[in-house]
Length: 426
Ligand SMILES: [Zn+2]
Image 1 (tube, protein in one colour):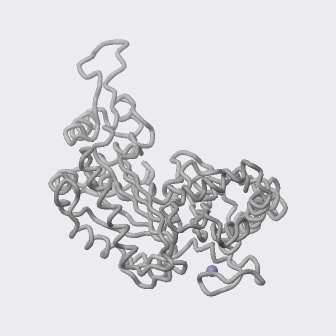
Image 2 (cartoon, rainbow, N blue to C red):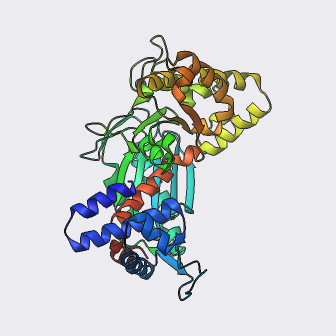
Image 3 (spheres, rainbow, N blue to C red):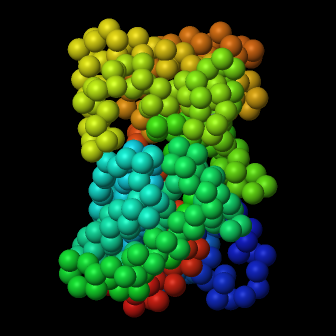
């Protein structure tokens, strides 16, 4: 959320406690997005008076969320009190359930990683109960690690490669996992509540939410102040293809939260059968499954379900670097199909950026040439509509990072809620 939106909300409410909470959150967001700076500049940039900002900064320092340096220095030439976020004081946890891998990441307010874990699974052939056991196990370890590091966990958000109903928060359909109508958040929460961690019983479990993995990846790919990312399309490559469209800095969710299912755009009516039951969906041409089918034989060790996604991708990167002909041809083909589908979206939306996220980011340098050639050929507007193609800095960790960032939102809306969380998780 932009600072301006918060300012509007603050002025629209008359409740002094709500105004205070929103202003505290505004300062935290401003420090997160713009980095450390003097208290005077912080006041100026958030539209608060110096005295109000001073009081609020003191309150945030009391909560252990910010530190102030240079207090007590006065006079001309002094830089003034410098305010910065305290690293590791609080963290959000993001988890991901995908077809061939599970992941978890805890990040603090400044975006630093507090805990991280990944596990390879064969989600297509395992019952949901087992997959949920495994993901809860990873999350429990991350909670214990965060607690040991002294960080208070503000929430947990689980990303799933499927449709998540915005109202009921049920995973309505995850075609590649074969899941329908599963209450993932409740199932994970129940497992966490029953878990005992390595340093004693896990305290009351923070709030658990569920969201579409590509929507979460898009949250991680947003860069406040970067106009080219305020309108963007995020292509999140996994076994299939997750997508998200960002307009004016916000992820478009649609009526029921199901927007962005671009993986099921039909790009090749004579193409392969998709996990959704249709033929020729975009993800059947560009998902990791398609790449592996083109680049490897069925008994290739890179397909071992026990491998983590990172291990699998590292092998493919090695083969591409060694200029293995079959690998390069497969990457070229996937790149061209990526360009063909991306052109439909660029013609429709004229985004500032198309972000290659998920597995596409790891193999981006080999996908880009064919992608850009096809995009230039298929987009009507001159100079490809001014759309840039960017490679994500987060790659396959974008969804868990987005989940962790979303999990920090309740604190950013009301930093005073931290006192209650302190009683819970540390
Ligand atoms: Zn499909």
